[in-house]
Image (cartoon, rainbow, N blue to C red; front, side, top):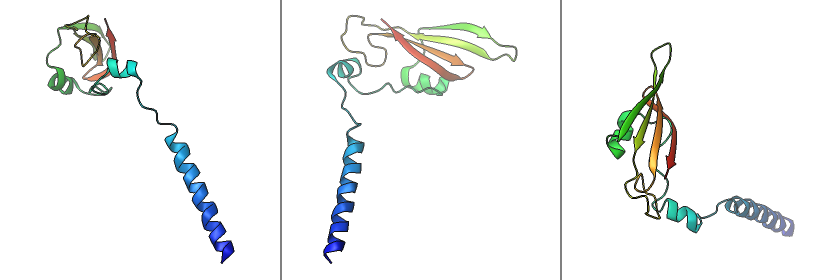
Length: 114
């Protein structure tokens, strides 16, 4: 009987260690990250279609054709201009201009500039 209890205690200890070690990898965002993205991550994801982007942010301020390959696939850069560059936080494209690169109909790169 005592041996069974020791086994359960040992297994419980192992399970507790596994659970605790998994949680140690999760860290909350720091103050800088909260200021940069106060409402969480951008709603845009690589692989989204142009229509999906338009439904979130509307029409871009400018569209530039970067290249057209031999099959006629067009690579474009869409720019959403940041309206308030002195704002200390960035939500969507509020303070930082967003540059979206599309290969055909799908988003392949997303970066921002002040």
